[in-house]
Length: 288
Image 1: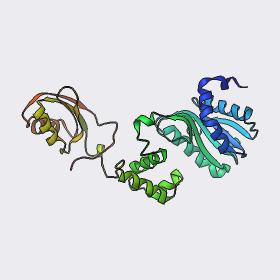
Image 2: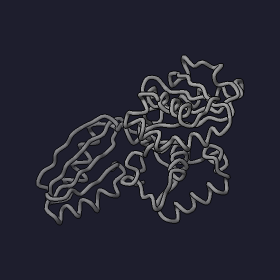
Image 3: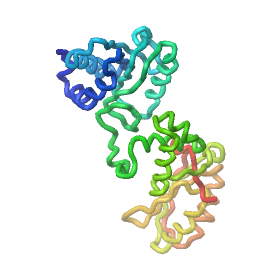
């Protein structure tokens, strides 16, 4: 038996995905493609387990970079393919590797392509040990992994058709529509337009305001309807309000403080930090 199969992470990976992968391959000729470098241990470990424990003799192993570089294409011909990696964090490597294989699918006669990973942080993989704290991030009694994929596509392109989304998540247009309607009805999701931040603004500012309780409530009433506001949070403990705004110039920041914050009597202290445009989000939903 391979020494890899004695390692705890490999045991955990195979324990969670092994039988599902074996079922996916069935009696078909199959190929495991591990992504270099992080997918090597999991790919080789899974390959050894399938050969030794499941007695699958019609399986081969190869590797590639996530852009397809270094792939032994001959090994994929007329086979079911499983891509294996260590984790999915942003989804970029996942998308690049699947696209690299899909471009070869017709030419090589690849029968199917799926993805296995130890840790899936955003719910993209077909097989994984676990998802990144999904139970604490998402209300899993309301949404599931397919809902997250559908929402992601709609957030990226609110005009995407249910039929197009359905093809990407292996559902019918009607099934996608029903899921979206359910999410909207339960107020878990909203489809709306937004401004592309870098087309309208050039800088941001974080403003911390300490004020008397009555003044703080009045400030909230004024600021929550201000189009510059991208984030407004009342902090616990001290009577403090955190305000994030998007503007076009330093002059606009000065105007905002003078005309919106200082216009409300009762402010004790105002601290301002000026920054670049936010890394995330890229889309902004102002109060117009």
